[in-house]
Image (cartoon, rainbow, N blue to C red; front, side, top):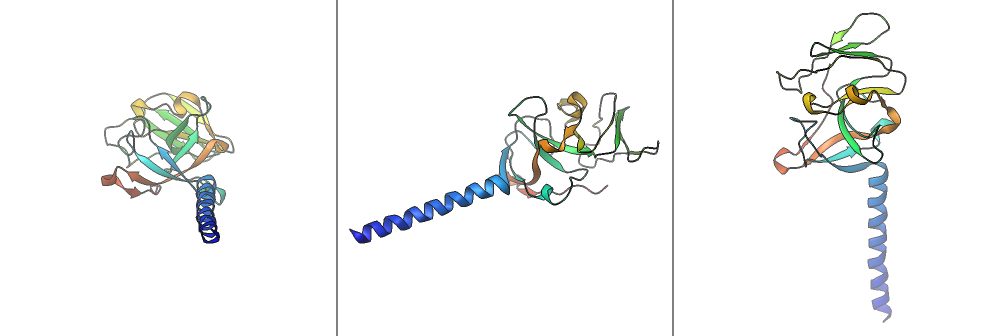
Length: 182
């Protein structure tokens, strides 16, 4: 009987340690995310299974071009996936199918070169916003079918869950992601 109880205790220890490890990893390091919808096509599709890095933004600020998951600014417990195109302190202007970034308070700007989009994709709308500290401008890669900053304004940094690092599903598209260089 004693041998049985010791074996049972060992099994319980393994289960408790495994559950605690999974809880800590999921709560503070990495979280799974299932893409729902077409707003990030052609780069992310409906039912893509992603891993979200929750720790990087504790050590550095988000960078232009990164794909992030965040809590919806308008709908409670809904989560979105979008690309960061505007950073705090910048002015972002969407006009004539292009995204203009004004990095400083003057009128010098650059047109965002978005190699991750298909060539014929244009960013529709007439939008101009000055981002404050802790605010970001996000767009879906499928610009014609994306509910993004053009609809609801800037994204507050505290709404960000994390950075998309890996696609795990479908298996033929497994890959790691990094922000494009500008």
